[in-house]
Image (cartoon, helix red, strand yellow):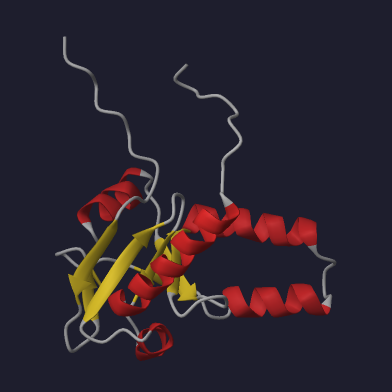
Length: 160
């Protein structure tokens, strides 16, 4: 008997795609399939921690809103800053018939993207980077991980 393929729930891998002169870029097929499977929209905004574009599902944005509501006093300067950085900059990106989105000039400039874009899986989210900038960032991440001996607490598995 064959095994039923497991549903994909995470954005995985790093994939580099070409960006055309109009800012159109193909979303990797696995990423598109995950968004379609979850029947959700792609939402993107400029990262405020890195020179990249943060991408997630509309459901993840809803969860983020709940987290912000629980974490900050309404109308506090911290809440105002964070919501302005995220929501005022966020936009839903529909795919065209070939699975492409159009990156705005503002997003491309922020991430230093010109003719290529690296889609970097981050589990429940992903980022879009200039491939050269991400290669340098990845080296730093690996060095920090080695220095800090990053580990994950083993909480068990749903498949045990």
